[in-house]
Length: 296
Image 1 (cartoon, one colour):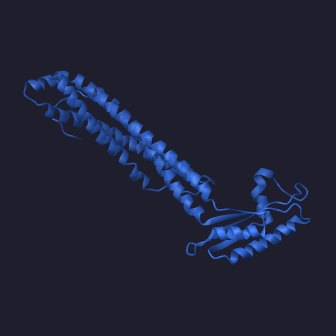
Image 2: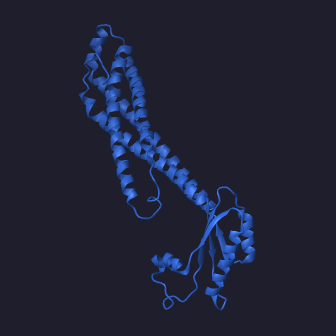
């Protein structure tokens, strides 16, 4: 508690100012946490996808026995991958794995239900030590067959990163808007408090108190109320993030279930109530000085 020697009437702000500050800090903290999660999510996906390549082997429908032909091509591609520097491992999905992958869309696939050849997938993990010449590999595979496509995820990740960056920029603007609204609210509450204490301030002027002395004590009182509300907003934000973190950890499948929310996020969002406290102090001092100068 900040000590003040002046008995200001602060009843007008005791409920309003902490409540509105807590609400604003809560909103800004959740917005900031969302931006951080998006940044960590992008980094996590970059790490997981940068060393992965997917090769899709399409069936040759003109062939009399497309299933056998595609199996032969998969074996030859696997041999090419084993001989390629920079390839750590590869796995060709079996026909059963392919049907399981398509089950959510096509249901149970059997010879009597869907008598068409299915494309096959080969997942490739590249080496962290030996660089892979993706252009040379793509050219070699294309020369072998034009019914094979290679997906490196680079273009997809670039688009994903751009989307996350745009979202983070928008969230940053929202945080600035929230903090600006907080400053305006504090200025309004401070001015209202000064008007409510006009008689006290006039008496202090009569006994020789300077505006600097009055400003110091009144702005400290406003900052104390704002800091109190900021702490409450921060605690509520931490509880909300913990609930979301627990809920996300219980999700089976999807990109969120494989992502671990960083525990440092609680320390980072602590910046929000600290910034709110600084804004409240600066705003209160400026507002008090301007209002007192008009009173004199």
